Image (cartoon, rainbow, N blue to C red):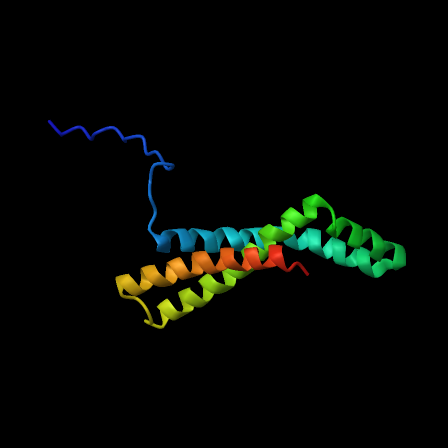
Length: 126
């Protein structure tokens, strides 16, 4: 008689503690998706600003709304994190910083630097 396989166990994803590299990698994917999904919105906003003077004033008004200010915070994080994590991934592909301590350090730097860029944007908005 064949052994029965054990039933799959429930995996609590919220209880898993990811290493810094895992957080950087997942953040890289999330930031890429956020940037991709924001393209239609920002293309529409850009088109609105080019229609005429009233369209430009409306576009600037939208950008000064609370919703767009929060959205811009997410976009600043997305752009900065995606750029920094992408550079990190390229360096790892070139076998630079692949040893465990260096890889953990660069992942922490990427995660912290992206948040630092957002903080700088909050203090000095465009």
